[in-house]
Structures are given as C-alpha cells and as structure tokens.
Length: 167
Image (cartoon, rainbow, N blue to C red; front, side, top):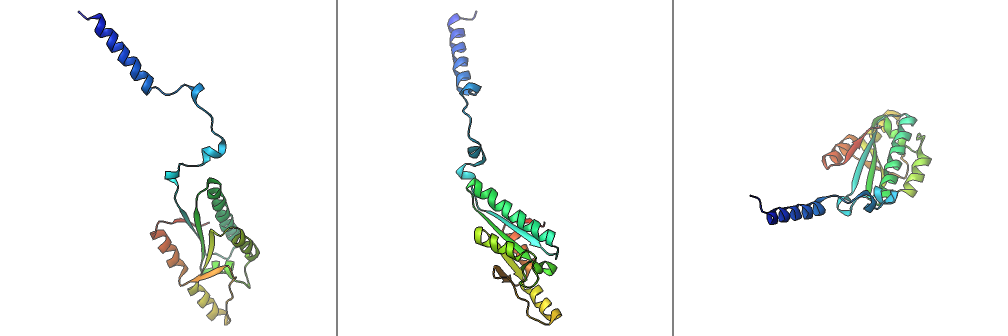
C-alpha cells in the first residue's frame, strides 16, 4: 500500500525540478536590440585574418577583391572585432599595384587611408620578370609592399591559419 505521505513528497520534488529545469515563459524573455544580437560574447572574439589573391589583369576582379576586403573589414568593425586583410598580387595581377597601369590605384589609396586593416602585397618575382620583359623599372603604388613571392606569401599565410579567398 502506497502511503499518502510518500506520494505527496514525490509530487513536491517533481514540481521543484520542473520549476528549476523548465525554460522561462515567452513573456519573461526580453528582446535584445539588433546590434546586441550581432555581437558575440567576448570569449568568442578573436582576430580574423583574410588573404585575398589577385592574379589576373582584369579590373572587374580587382574591384571584386577590393569590395570583398572592404565588406569584410566593415562587417567585423560593426561587431567590434579585429580583422587583418592582405591583398596579395602576382602574375598579371601585379597590374593592380603598378603605378603606371593600375585601374584601381585611386580606390586603393582611399581604402588604405580609411581602413588600415587592409594591406597590399606585390610579388617581387613578378615585378622582376616584368622588368626584364619590358626593359624598364616597374613602379608600384606607395600603398604596396613587395614580398619575395606572392604565391609563397599566400601559402605561408594559409599555413598560419589565415582564410584564403580568390575573387
């Protein structure tokens, strides 16, 4: 025979467990502003790193790479998170950073002034090969820094965990 006292004790224990484990009702949940919903908890914040490769002498591809870079930089700025972006050029893509042939040099200057998180790297091997082929110095825009090899630079950044994108 079940004792009334035991049933009462068991029922009380179940009610306590349900109150502790049950989720709050919809009326108790506060809505968060959209900006807070975008922000991640501080523990999740890290430095984001992106390498964009440009290896073609096509203005549309160059502009796409610049769009990608500025969009990513703005996205993480809005979240209050840090990002570092390198645009690495080699082969025909070096024209993006050539002072005498770049169709996007004014845009790069503007980006560099407003968004220091974005940097531009030029392949030294390509610059040297163009120098030999054209029999003249290959001037680069002031915003460009030369690396020995553009391909090696992309590889090394990927090996360090950078995210790679080819627009």
